[in-house]
Length: 305
Image (cartoon, rainbow, N blue to C red; front, side, top):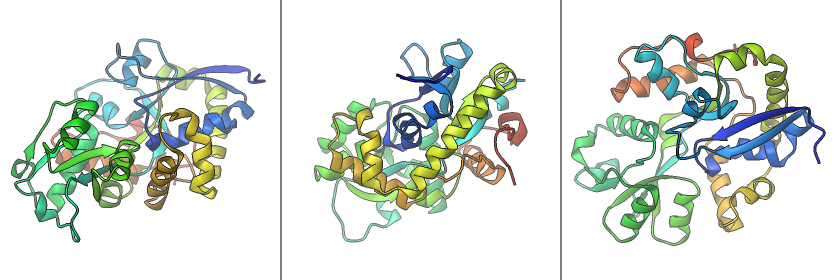
C-alpha cells in the first residue's frame, strides 16, 4: 500500500539491466518515499519508441536515448521532448566473439561477420564510431542486419557470425553458456556520453514542476544508493524485473556496468556528455547539424556546472 499522492506513468524502451537505475528507484521505494506513485511499463508495440508514447498521451515520463530528440530537431521540429535527467553515462553494449582468443585485436574484425544491434539506431552508431577510431570502416565487415534480438542470438549461436553486438542481460547469458566471449566494451571505448535519459513533453515539464521535483528527489536518492552499494545487494533489488535470469548472471552484469562507471551518482545531464553523443551522431551521418544543448535538455531540475 503506497502513501504516494502523485501518479506518474513511466515507460522504458525495452527491458535491460542497463536501466538498473529505474528498477532500483521503483523496488527501493525511492519514488514512493518522495510522493510519487509510479505506473511502470515497457513500450508497447503500437509505438515505435517511447517518445512516440509521450506524443500520443500514453506516458508522462520515458526512458529514451537523447539521440531521438536531437534527430527530430535536426529534421526541423520546432519542439521536441525534453530530457531532464541522466540514466546511463556510457554505452551499455558489448561485442562478443564466437571464438575464444588470447589477445583480441581490432584488426580481427576486418573481413569477419558481425551481427549489429537491429532494434535501435544509437548502439550501431556508437559501434561505428569505435570502429572508425580504430581505422576500420563498417564496409570492411560483413553485416547480418535486419534481425530481431531473438533471431540475432539464434544466428550467432548457430555459428552464422563471428561477432555479435548486445546489451545485458543477453551478453551475459551467452558468456555464461560459453557461446560468446567478451572482446569489446563500448562503454569503455566511447567514454562518458549522454546515452540514455528521462524525457517528458514540454507541457508536462512546464506544468508539473512539483511532480518533477519529487521525481528527481527520489531518483537522486536511488542513484546515491546505487553508487554506494555492492552488486549482490543491487541484484536483489532488480531481480524481480528479470525473473528468468539466474541471480549470478544479474550480479555479473551489474558488476560489468559498475566497473565501467555506467551509472553516475547524480542525475545531472551536462553539456560535455551531450556534445559527446552528438559527435557520434554526426560521425555516423545520423544528423547534419549540431543541435543546441538547451533545445533538447532542461537544467531546471539539477545543477549544471
